[in-house]
Length: 568
Ligand SMILES: Nc1ncnc2c1ncn2[C@@H]1O[C@H](COP(=O)(O)OP(=O)(O)O)[C@@H](O)[C@H]1O
Ligand SMILES: C=C(OP(=O)(O)O)C(=O)O
Ligand SMILES: [K+]
Ligand SMILES: [Mg+2]
Image (cartoon, rainbow, N blue to C red):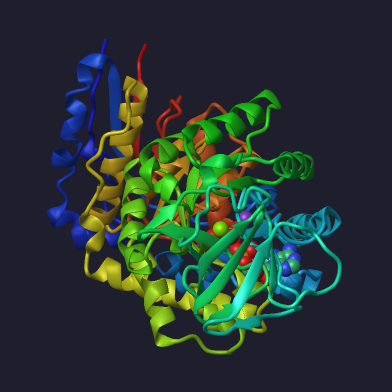
């Protein structure tokens, strides 16, 4: 039989400082009315609130538990509301691959280290992954590892010079798939042997989304003879695309999403224990499902991210987002396939869809491109970064800025500062009120989880609590809270290492690894003690506690919480 309680008398007197300010307009009963409808389904809801008690002796055993040292320092310095919510991903390359350089990035707030398998050797990648794991275990960081598959990109394999070559207006060039030694002037090697197939005289060959443009004059077997009609630079690995009558000629559909090399890189990622695999040039949900199924047969909880970087992936966006564990807006290649002026709106649409469907989303490429060479960003770059934060992306990514740039650490600090500033502004402007309306849950327990998280986020904002605590095994409740982008940070306590590492990518979630027991009260006591012992909670702080684990006894004097129990 159902039981329903919303016991406001459990809120202690005197009220915590933060509650005292807002209690007159707290409409707890109104907030929880939706649950009333679930009453008949066998639910118990219990609302309680109290003051955090001072430090106790028993807390020592939790001191060594998994909480990122950088977040901890930030929290001590800036308080709960000052914690940065937007997550930061850094591409690791030759400019930042030493232990010390990686340490600096970790100190600078890198949440996820990304390794693009397009570049360098497996040994090199292995060395970097091991250094990151060592930093985590020895220095107390919590940095997740992501690898990107190479995918089937059509690009320049060699243009005969170590850096760039200039293509002059009217000059004649050969694009070939033939492999040869040494340098042939005006000859560019393309990466894919089917490169010229289906290409006709008069088609346009666009380099790097407009860096230079050629007109196809003649097709000779696998070679194309072209005339440069818009001069520009040919960079190493420049991206190539074909256009006919103003429309993209789709070459991706001919190519497999995962090549033999990609599968070998995936095996490598599995054996090195990476946390995320980002799939390049995903065409549809099948590709994502294929990899996810493969990983599940191997019993691996590695998260699969889909990179949206082709026109085709935009056409199937919804099914791809549904199928994947997260999305990367890979603006570099996307800008080759769609006109650049469409990127800003496409980015916002993808971010909104991801939030609706509750998938984390990374905005990537050229965020601070000029910082590869210069120590300060352009105003336009800072505006671009801030815009992605305003749109509530989960994460921002550095590419060349950290991988090969001279100012990677500084670029990371620009991301950090710009996100903190924009987050504060959004909060003050109360932009967070636009809670997603889309309903995700199908089964009743899923619907309940979703509704609890929606209401909890509103309550957290309305009450002005300092933090939200969530107890989660697979990260679902934490991510549903994050989806609402609440004002206070979300501390997600989990006993699954893979959940902790996956939550690193989610907006506003601070994942913490602890032993969880079936006794919820015990968990709550343990974890509040942990945070308190680290001097991150003090007397009078208010915490909203969310969990889908059934409590076994009631201890209304140590927390404010929102708990739902399903009685079978
Ligand atoms: N592991 C690596 N080894 C050497 N160079 C790298 C590595 N990773 C990245 N880079 C360099 O950094 C640049 C940016 O990297 P990335 O974000 O992977 O973008 P992309 O490959 O699309 O250019 C690359 O063009 C490449 O020059
Ligand atoms: C992130 C991207 O992918 P990659 O760096 O692998 O080309 C991109 O295209 O923007
Ligand atoms: K790639
Ligand atoms: Mg790409």
